[in-house]
Amino acid sequence: MIVLGLVLLVVGFLLKISILWTIGIILLVIGVVLAVLGATGRAVGGRRHYF
Image 1 (cartoon, rainbow, N blue to C red):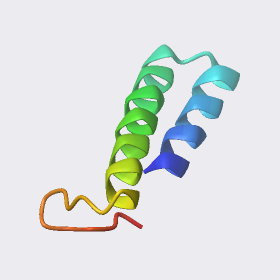
Image 2: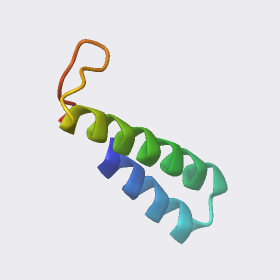
Image 3: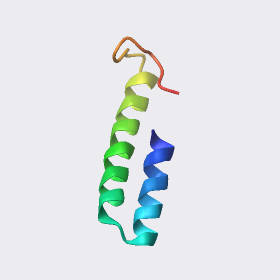
Image 4: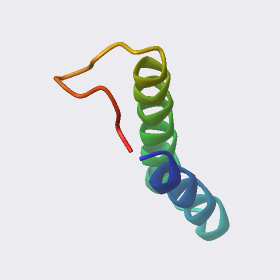
């Protein structure tokens, strides 16, 4: 999810498509939050890791 967010950010920036930029930011933030929660050992949605 983090990689997809980064890809959408770059594509949105290069092609000047604001919706891709927005979706990229949202996916990046959600991915980082899930990664941090998984790294601390806290299970989210029944899963301990999201990779």
